[in-house]
Length: 438
Image (cartoon, rainbow, N blue to C red):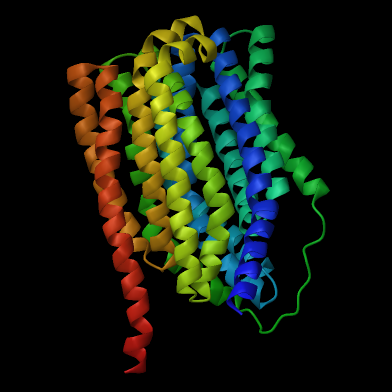
């Protein structure tokens, strides 16, 4: 019997590798190559000042989508498998869209005055402000559709979207700026055109939703309240995550220059992209089956997937850190334009920080799987405070070098705290049935 069970387990692992890991891995690698080549092309044609301005504008879009869209997407990931198991995931997807529209409505009274203030202060021009609004809408639509693809394990379509966008955005921007001139409006318009075009193609080519037998009626009003209750503690995470991951660019812009922002953002993207790629491959492949095992209360299966997840990220991340430490000069000559190469010495520090961040991300998924989003908020708050305090001090004292050194410091502290809290969330979830039985 044990040999039969072992053989069946090997078959399941083989099926999982073929259906999830292989297509996800291939698409992530091709997409990452597109982004890396895109950085090479854009740093060839753009000046550090324009590249820095684009980085700051994209940071604003990231902030808005992280606050308005991302918390609801975490709720979608949490409940999608559960309702798909019951017969249909369509109510979850409709509820997610409703929740986002409500968030947009509440965000407008704050966003509009801030936009007017930014234009009046001369931080951005009116055309850039209008393009930023369109970009935020496009990025929000992209986040919704790709999250649904991820949750429903449509890995081929998810991968196709990632590949098309990672290659299409920089290629179109490179061609447009070469033809029309080096202006932020040209780059932003290119990014928007690619994302909207991909969205249209994916909507047009989408097949009918898979049918299923509904075992119970879904009260979508109650589901919306459940979504809001789950997502509410995560809402500050958008701001906190942005502060810890993007605020250094704005501090560099304020304390140093926009040109320094451009060099830092280019090197940051190259050093972090391979690690984010490997982390995303592991998460996209393992997270759905891990969440499913947690939902079934299969402790052995969930633990097996979790150990595999940590091992993949740790081993691959360590190898990449060694690569950046030994060959950052050569990588900069190959992958950056001449005006950006002098900042290559920042790569090892940024890569090390992102390995720690990728491991932290796994601990976050453990907390979310065990219905403890408030613990995630606590760790993100701590990281944001550290990122601002350490980042500001180190940038003021050591310039760009200080900004890079700060990354592994606050990411390491956050990892330690998140692992402790993840263990607490697992123990708390196990103790709940026992307490209910008593």
